[in-house]
Length: 206
Ligand SMILES: Nc1nc2c(ncn2[C@@H]2O[C@H](COP(=O)(O)OP(=O)(O)OP(=O)(O)O)[C@@H](O)[C@H]2O)c(=O)[nH]1
Ligand SMILES: C[C@H](OP(=O)(O)O)C(=O)O
Image (cartoon, rainbow, N blue to C red; front, top):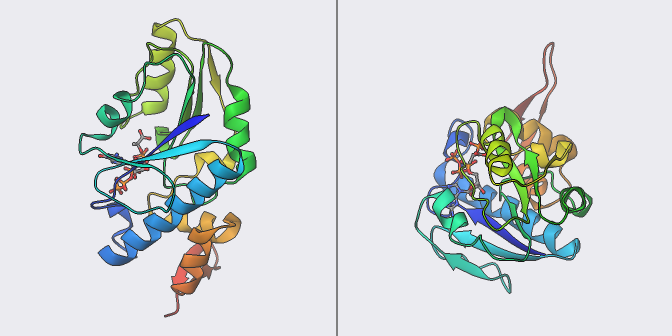
């Protein structure tokens, strides 16, 4: 299946500002992007990166589109074939998790993988009239938009797909469960779990 992977390449992951400087945020965002692309490919799909500026990801096609996120994605929807959408900031993604999203969908419908805090991390769109509307409580908006065009909906129950890495606390999940470049990047940068009295946090030793 064709998959769109939107990527903010210009100023990625600004909410990680408390723990990573701008160059580190760019490098970590690219590591997560590579994990997402590798998982999609290993699951047998064809990713295209839809990026705000040029990035080189080897033989993965990159479409540069400086429109806002939803406009850039919607410009690529509307055909008859199903299209997947997967965000680029999934540091826990695996081929099996991608498979759970694809398997949830069916002819004519819209499958949605919710993100933490009301967002949407993945979609499989098999209805020509469905359009995305990211930001805000987008998971709720996407389910309503699908029903409004008469599409059947499915919600994917996946810890790995729901954990988008937006805030410093999310790095705990990458350190614990990540299996790819993002987790390795964090360890190389000196991050480790901070295990104290309350919820586990992160600590940086170098
Ligand atoms: N093509 C495109 N992708 C975007 C845009 N904004 C965000 N994205 C991507 O959409 C997904 C979800 O975005 P966010 O979680 O807000 O990521 P972000 O913009 O890097 O992070 P913050 O600066 O912390 O909001 C990620 O895959 C981003 O790379 C945009 O304007 N254009
Ligand atoms: C783009 C946005 O991402 P979040 O800010 O929830 O990570 C969303 O999922 O609608």
